[in-house]
Length: 495
Ligand code: FES
Image (cartoon, rainbow, N blue to C red; front, side):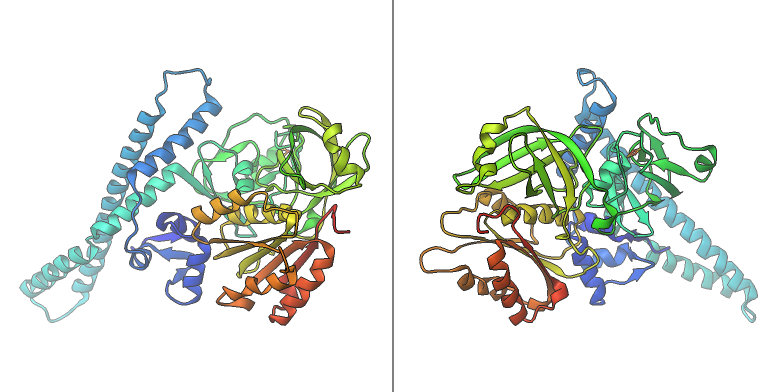
């Protein structure tokens, strides 16, 4: 029986982005059967596939470390996670081999049954001829059902990935993500870039209620919200209090736009506030565990700091971490907010945030690759969008062009370079408008290296006066309006 595998799991197995497999499907190089791929075709397309045991071991060890720490006292030193990881690896491989053998035997028995039927219905053959036909067919069948070493290895790896991570599929959206260790479905979903519906994250509001369509889940935390007996009977659970034991399919609500995200007012605590250089202040803050910020990547908030005017600032962090928020605040001469901010706030102080607002969000339904254009602190919402796109893992290619104007710097240049180094599909270009070079002069560099200029979606965040220039440039390059999203820098020194 042909072995099928979901797109997400296939991407993990052969170590490519889902977008790459989707492209090969669109181009007819890989076939899908109800959204799944044939394992044998996958191996054919990626013959060099191999997952090194050592990296797998390290990965399992870190997953187990986190899981064990969650459920066992952290000072319990009787647990040796590396030994446990090695045992799981060995058991997983053994199980995969046994399952492969059992599957082959079942296939042979099924084929044999059909052949007997066929022979008993055929006329004109002597017993001896029938036996010889049967013997010949049997050896041929054994040969065709014999799996290649590569294929059985791939099945063993796939089985091992199942031990390490359960896959969750959300209906009706069809989005997928993996749960590693004993993370909750909600935690893993947010980390996977999904905008699942939720409120408190701790089992009291009921907003993360979802229905198990198939698979097995396990409650990992107590919850005060009471599901009715009827709801329990229908398979409803709370995503923040359960994890997946096997691959599961769930019916759950997801936000489709900013209109699905409620307005929130939260008192947050400063973790760190420090100037990055003389033009940018870095602010890191934390929400309470029980009142986290639900937002979409690319949105902004109002910061309400005692003694300072209320100011809109873009969120520079990813919604996949809804407790730790980051802001890059431009320092503007003569502006009371940025000039006095450092004097008014220190680590441990509180401030109030209101929001989120804004429509500068990712079009997740688009199959196109992504181009991000940032200018100065316009990098903040772009960073949030890039981290979200990385969590979603669907874009085939991501390009970042970060322009600095005189006096400004690429203040997180190292971060962008590390993305570029670590990810095959991420490409970073730093551009500086210095000397006689203006931003307008630099814009052509954005499309010069792209092979399919109209085949990308463009997201730009820049000081307002530069946005018109960028729009004109993209229009001239033939980019349709629906593939352009342009956002002015919030709290903009250029205004
Ligand atoms: S998010 Fe409130 S109960 Fe799960």
